[in-house]
Length: 400
Image (cartoon, rainbow, N blue to C red; front, side):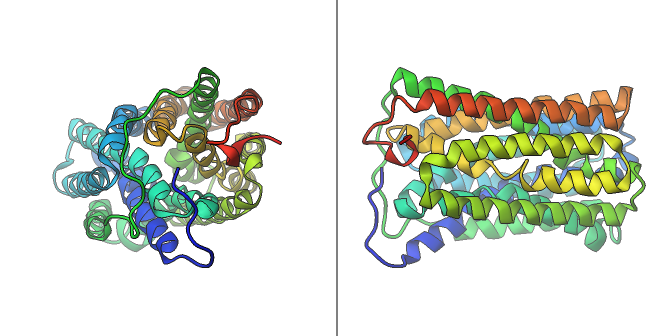
């Protein structure tokens, strides 16, 4: 692990966190733009809800490559893959704006965007270990894991500002420019962190814990990506105007960002409670999804507040705990957790779209509630299983 820096405020902490968060944000913007402008895309390309869910699942399915990229990142260092991720995201969004005139093209571009995000995830997690002092990493991971919520916020803002005025394709064009700008900010950590080393296999007990966390993340992400993909569409069905629904999406995204940053600050003070806190958030989030079953305006607002705030507040805590459980191979570990995100992303939106299309949106929110609750139980199990193998190399997530 990277040793703590000297006492006092450290400029590298702020700069390193900003760079990592920037790349994490632009690499996942294509997915959230897809959800934010879903009604416009569906109308122009004549797509149903299952088709939209499948497009989101293709993006997230490509993220299964994160496990492979994670091993490469451990060997080469994170900067190269951060640059490749930003370039891939820019290309994805520029091409979507220009040539996505049919469903096949949209699916292919979502696959490219997902592969770019698969590069970004393990790279930015390892970058934080190199660029941020250990005692500030809880906050750093909270800020970095706010990137999806920030991307969702930006996607929501593009609806009234761009998509409903000059067209949804211009939203993707703006995203491409943002990704190109992010490419320019990537640089080596200053002062540089430890040199990349070949990862060694973690102890069996640690592997078991990480796999449990990956399974939990898969379930939680299935619910969360269903929320990001279908919240606007479901809100419109509940009676909200399209523009109002987009502002609700943006508001929920800001709430998720605030919760993730606050959770990161708290875990720096009590790192051993990262996983119990994540489990509690997932379980509370399942209540929010359950409220949204009603599909009336007040239920959408109240349930969405819980689902976005607490149901989406846990990712930074899980990634923080996971990479500290295996300091010899943090990139590979982050890649495995990211693969769990991908599995959930593949299953969630596709399943939600099928259930919503064949029955109702309310029935689909039942599925999301069950998945979020199961995720919380799996994290609690993983925390219990990981208490025994606490070592000197992973003191920040060891139990008392």
